[in-house]
Length: 193
Image 1: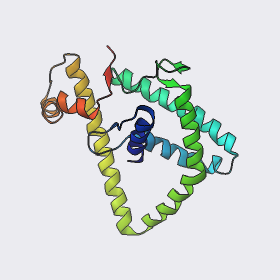
Image 2 (image 1 turned 30 degrees about the vertical axis):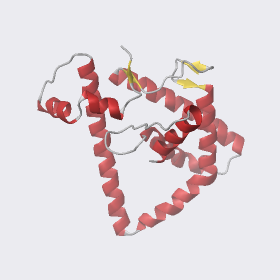
Image 3 (image 1 turned 135 degrees about the vertical axis):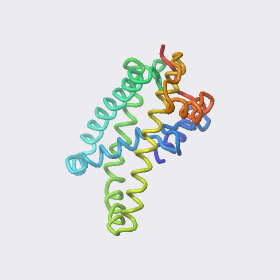
Image 4 (image 1 turned 135 degrees about the horizontal axis):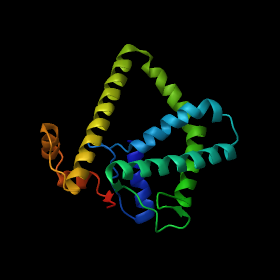
């Protein structure tokens, strides 16, 4: 959800209007940021006490590699792209650019400085059994959401490339996630072929 809000505010600052950047079919989730937070939390023991410049540079490099990799994987698997930086200077294949790499570095450094400890403190609330059950339920929901999103996007891509439904699952995906709905969810996703 924080990634969804970040993307929305970034669009207001950059383009003067709010954009909904969904990454999953159910809910306001932009999972690239969730994966980035998990990665930073795993690196926190190594980076948490480092100098700001070191934190910035590590986040700059890792954020850039991660963004490039996700973009490449999306195009390889689905034949689509959800962002394109060709119009910005110092871009690499339109997948990453200097401006966004600087953002990754700055936001990652701020997170390591201000956010990681708060998440660690917040995680202590999950020590009681009710919060653990809620956390597990949320985890299961997100795994299902991720799986359904991958299947729905793969089927959307197949329809775009003229591949007919092969089984009942394809028919269900076609019914529940027709092109109109997928275009609404992933309005900025473009087919590359």
